[in-house]
Length: 421
Ligand code: AMP
Ligand code: GLY
Image (cartoon, rainbow, N blue to C red; front, top):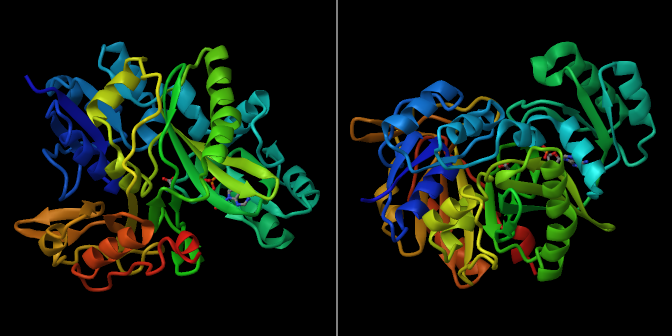
């Protein structure tokens, strides 16, 4: 009988996960919880309602649960599933603290000797401000806990740093900002390195680059990510080996020593500085939109690979990748990221999906009868594949150009760093 996989989440990342799982030779039945207008077999459930997700996994007889977002992991979803003998791709709550608490992550990095920005942990504003003044390159102010990607301020000057410190400790992000991390500002290009980890071993996936700012040329406010591409030329084999040895493995070892082994997806957000790679943060899940370029290139059976990881038996060999390139363009609704307008009817989806080498991954979409409507800020991620990055970009944008709704916007320069040379 075909296995059942429950994919938890509702973004473009989860649609891409469902897509590669469905390509598996085991032909799994993929259930999406709660999913979107593009995902298969949607079940209405809130991802942070751990009891409800566990009950759904049991009711559906899930052979594997793949968890997209971090919040349910920090709340102990993986612990609960493992306690019931259900294999899960995602760490237990104790290891998920790597994303759930920035102070925890920094302390683990220090213990593991991972290169990262100089930092301090504060609960008093005056002490935090005094520390920020000692950082010659400028300060970055971070709420300790999960703040839906809004808890980080890269300050342009000391006045902005001080305002952010008083704002966050003053309760702007509630509980998440009771503790503050202040760290030195780093400069360089960012790179996402995502690995599968089975508690002992890691299998590093292809490097990718995200585009966090809403505007072309990396301008305007931060977003969840407006586009990505893979492979990223900055992720050379030498760099990837260095990241494996100095940014990923030492953390896995420290967590195992602390009695919180990491089993799941470990994502290092790196700054490539003039002095080498520095870890900005860890996430305990796949990136969005990085997943939409990494997974379509995977030349492995995704179900077998994820299952091996969940069972603590990752193969002792590199993960196989297609030599082709992938590039994804996020299409966002009017007003994103500040105040996205929802409910607009989307046209052209079938035309775009029918193009060769184009995948349309849904994110903030919902089905209203036969009409697909926008239901979130990031609406779609249109991925193109090609023999090189330029060809992948051409495919992605040919898909994007066929899709429309009132106020849709996207960046026209995804991949510019790699394409300019
Ligand atoms: P984080 O959630 O910690 O990754 O921060 C979100 C974004 O803030 C990162 O992707 C970077 O663009 C930026 N950032 C975080 N830490 C630093 C730092 N120390 N120096 C410069 N930029 C940073
Ligand atoms: N693309 C950034 C993230 O998933 O956190």
